[in-house]
Image (cartoon, rainbow, N blue to C red; front, side, top):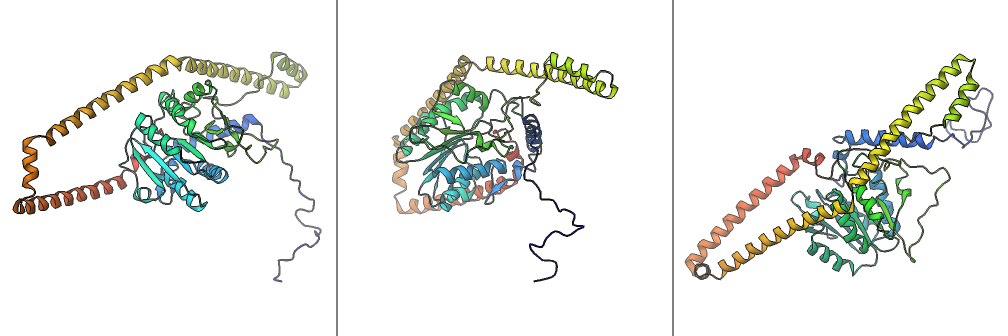
Amino acid sequence: MAPGFCHNRPPMSGDAETEPRSDETELPAQSEVERVSREFTKVFHDLRKQTFSTTTWLGVQLVKTPNDILVMQQIINETKPDLIVETGVYLGGSALLFATLMDQLDIDGKVIAVDIDLDAVRDPVREHPKIELIEGSSVDPEVVARIRAEARGHDRVMVDLDADHRAHHVLEELRAYSPLVTPGCYLIVEDSFLGGRPVRPEAVPGPSEALDAWFGEDPPFVPDRWHERYLLTQNPRGYLRRVGDDAPEPRPPRPPSFMIGALELSGSEESFPTPSPDEAIERLTEAAGRPDLEVEELRRSINNMAKRDRQTHIEADLDRRRQELTVDSLLREMEAQRELLAERNRLLARERARLRRIEGSGPYRAYRGLRRIPGFSHYFHWRDRSRKSDAQARARTRAENREKQTERFSEHHRGQ
């Protein structure tokens, strides 16, 4: 054995540590855990050009914290979904994450990813055999009906909501897609840390407010706070497990010391366990005659009063937000969105009717006849090839431009 690698020798006099070390350590207070978690989450978000904007999965960017990526891997490994529905695709990193995890776990399933704009989706995502991309609004009735029909052929379904984060849209998604989730599987609502929980206080009402409204409908889901145990998450209260007779209890059991960041307590800098006035007077009385203790207790009492006042303002602000997010206001927003959708469908129907009129017209029929004449046919084939070549050149240019649009990634509508 090499010198200096002697194992299991008895401790010698002069060793730096001869007493056995205890595994018991003093745990931080819950208020301190919450404070640190909120501050770090804000820093992580504020430095998004070096955090969110640089996170990738197999070379494709995705707007997630490393902790949430790890949690989603654990959820998929635990529940083995054979269908994952994702709303909000952007570059496609999340869809690629889900699909490659299915490959590694030998799950015979697929990922359906829907977004209103798929132009930015990267080639590895488009080419993956387990990923089906749908272009359209996630709350478009046709899109919802298509996904529901697909879900009927699968035994274990998971849903990840990461599209438009305005409250009315998230609430509509929750109502449309939550019935697809099978007992024991998960519905994930992303970016519920917006609206000052603890980042971007102006982004309200958002996912967290939508969750408040939806929980009032008594859905068969419970927030699984175990998946917030790493303290940094962009989805507080967002890991929702569907309960039911066949749904197993999550594992492992929670340790007695289990704590989370409680990021959903919007805008609260800390949870302040302020003493009652009688307790404060008692402490001041005990410290009387000892200037050092007396000054310290006075300082502590003043700080507690200031903290209590801040907490009162925070709670008042929360009440104001809850009052603003009424069912009527959400219904009005949803009705406005439905009117926009109806107008879009009307314009689309008008355009389709115009195309049908063109195809049935005499000039168009004459044009189709010319294409069958040998001399004209050669010309039209040449023109079609030229147009296809130009389209391919434009597609290459767009692909090159997408690679240069890193700023768009950090300023995307998901609020990162």
